[in-house]
Length: 381
Image (cartoon, rainbow, N blue to C red; front, side, top):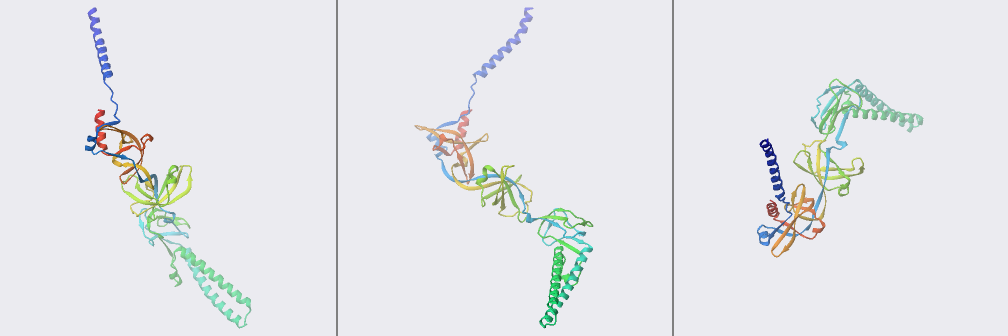
């Protein structure tokens, strides 16, 4: 019985012994903390090309980030409508097709077109008669052969006929009737609708045989010649943005960058989005760009002096930026400290930074940072 009990106790004793050994091993293993400084001899620093100096102030423009879309002004986004109702006799319109100014968009026909032209020609004939009658009454009045009232009545009739001709003529011009042909007596049973601008057809609302009412949309055309950028700038950055500032634009999801310039800063503040609308024009038009595309932009504000370091003098770790400062010099030994800094802008190989107050005026490493980080990593292992 005792032998059985002894055998059963052995695994438990071994387990406790193993746990104690593990705990002892874990307790005895020192946990190293990452080094934040490194000490080198002056000779090592010179051989590694490490150079340090006080921070220099440079004019570096701060970029304001903004998002937006590509749009066209209302004058270049046109809805084509029918002035008078008519039946679509012919159209080749397709959404997405490109048209040039003057291209035929549709051909309409309706008896009212004929009646309007007939009324115009009759009014012209009446005007010709009224003009002759006015001249005759003026001659008679000059010879005291008629009353002044008859001359005035003839003048009124002439003016009324002239107004009628102008009114009908304006309506026919709006309708697209060839007035030169009509004045020769050629009545046109059909009306041709032409493109007022060059651009892309974005929407089509007609088909052959459809009756189109007056002011009903036939199609929409957007010109890309005046494509512009509409950006939303948030409240904290509004005072930094001005007309004339350069903008770097990137189409969302693409790598190519485009240059633009601010042309308008809206004075109205949008309380819902806490932003102001800013508009910019491209320096060069690009036919591959389309209205409605989303863009990311960097608005380059006026240059201002900032304390700076070369870009390669900064190290990024865990989404934070660090720089090395000369902490102390003891005899021939130099101690460099890795300190967190705020990087606020970059331009022409230099970065504008903000350092903690206690490091103001201290020398910072300008070159050779890679050697310092490598040495520090080895000491941390």
